[in-house]
Amino acid sequence: MIYSFIKNNEQLFPIEKMCRVLQVSNGSYYRWKKQINTARQQLKSAIKKQIALIYFQTKQRYGSPRITLELRSIGYKISRVTVAKYMKELGLRSKLSKKFKVTTNSSHNYLVVENVLNREFTVKMPSKVWVSDITYIQTKEVDMLT
Image (tube, one colour):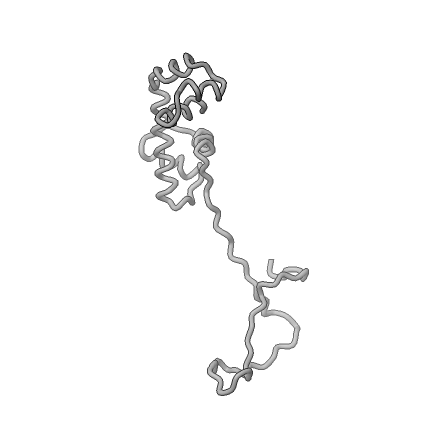
């Protein structure tokens, strides 16, 4: 990670200074820079690109199991655990959709007020009709629907 930082900032700062500040030797940085990517590293990089591509094509909804199936369908032999590890390295997490929760309980023994408005929402005088919805307010009442 340090070597990647140095390589990305070569044009901005002298390499020797960055190595001194980051406490790495110049020689080890230049050796790292000269090394070639192995076939395994290239495969890992290609898989990570495919994972990111599938992840964003599916609106960030797919997790490692579904992405694994997608990768297998295009020819990669990879486990779900490996996909999960690569997703973690890339900082990708699937978005979870919230479940619908019913907030209205019509089967109760409470007083039901008569519908005097009868869906006629236009009024002739101000403050004649007031309407509100307070179902979003949480109470300590036990949920009867679940």
